[in-house]
Length: 286
Image 1 (cartoon, rainbow, N blue to C red):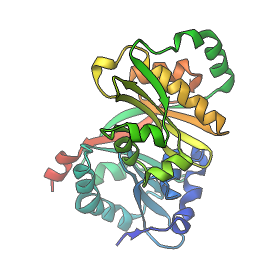
Image 2: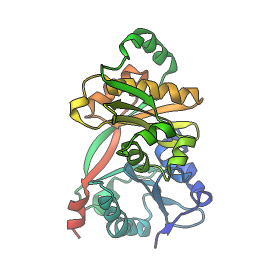
Image 3: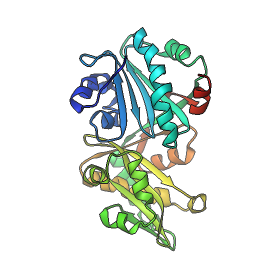
Image 4: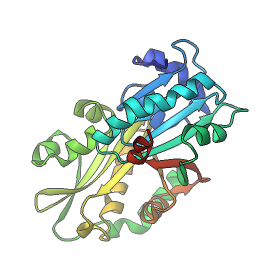
């Protein structure tokens, strides 16, 4: 059976597997126990392969790909435990990335594990460039004012209390174990319109000084007005004031997200594959 690694001390054994991925923020946050997720490995001590689920974000297969017993049990754990939990939490898509150790290749394993049903897309990572962000601020500071009726706020306890519907709390707890953890380690901004939160930009995962960005304008009626850019810019400033580093990753078809990242001084890196499949479709195959 796969071993569930509950303690950060146990999960820290997996740190070398992600050290070549710029300390991967999402996996790092889950391994540290800050953000919600589950970690399974082939062995409690000196694991060679692992499955990491970052809730509401991504599944990851890391390490050796030729671990046949591990590979067989991964599908079982996914189908019997993790995917039903993800479905009940509102996720409808299995999204999967792989990080093999040198010399390993997950391609044939994935084909067999999911009966050739996985689709393949592309994710685009960005690296923050402080100088370019400063240049953009100088050019664009006058255009960051919110449209009439909208207010940009930094998320703190008082703002959460004023959010009577609980939109901010709901967004934070999709990723974080508690609001207190977020207040202590995370950062965020929001847009308020007529007393209601209509958009948020928050640290969805934090690993050390690295913050992965999650941004959302909830109702299409509020989009196309520059709200996301303003929230993201204020969020980046807040992260920098904490002497931390903002990160941005998105899918290749999210053109608005790519454009905002580019405005704010994030430099586009090389796209890499992400595998996906509707959860219900996978469960129906069983």
